[in-house]
Image 1: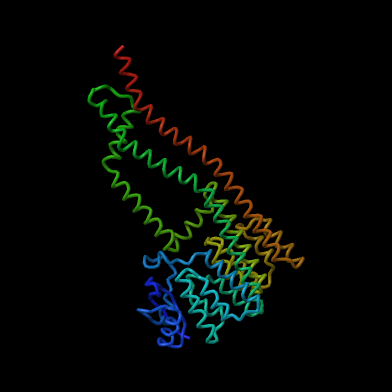
Image 2: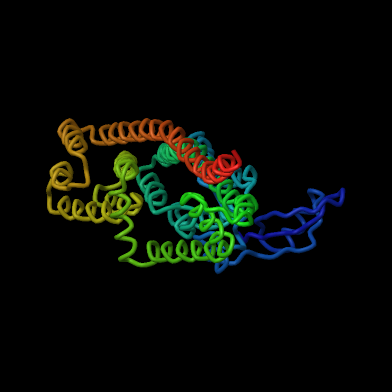
Length: 409
């Protein structure tokens, strides 16, 4: 059944936008008028438009992004409807009416159309890689194959919510130190560039021999005042260049992944988060009936680190040759020894999925406690650094004044 986008007015003259599925334009207009909605523009969403759902954040779609939270809510609602023995097409219809995001509403309507025409849910959502990841699609495919789609969707919602919760905790932990650093940097820049020259201008008029620390401050202030626009553009240019190199070139991506794992303090956190993501994703996939080799090929794309992804590829090849997962992981330097030991215990007891969940929980708790500890240390360190810099400026200004007082006496 075709899907139409419409612009209309209601009986009170209020402007409305939305989508509707109907057999034809005429039927769509009739159905809208019956609900006191009077369309002024009605056009069909074509298959070509469906497949043009952007995977990135283009300017045109910047304010129509489908967030991970919206996908999680939609997934849980669909799981609840299907578990109540409501047919899939009817469940999708109910979801469309409940969804407030116009882009997600449009996508769900197109998915419903394909499912109504006989396509599987996994195949329908695979047309939207910007919204549904390969992990999500394969989970849904496994759920449809096993007849436990509602259970798999519930696990998907749990998985997405746990990821959101961890991200939220990390963002909340680093928000205050970052804000302090940003505001402190602006204040210091403003003091050095615009306030200090007005004060130090008095010293140059008096032709007094100035201390070295004051001369250095005056030189720095003059340089920043004269070239601050150039400095800003240079910093932006360096940032854009490094971003391009580290994200768009294979060598740059590999080099950046290596740097991230070896960074002081943050390297171990990034490493633990990647291994935790590997464990939770693999456990969720296996728990939903996805074969081991397929699960490993999906997991290597979600760890967000090229070095660990290469290690997973090697593990996958060894598993394909008949080796145990724990044995292959134990040979890799990128996976802690306790990970292979717990996986080995899970393989022997037949509880591999539960062990993978435990590994993920342990690492995530460790990351969370480490971040809390680091941020509690960062705050006083940043205050100390800001205090020292402000003290440097104050002392540089006060020293010549003290010398002037000595001369007067």
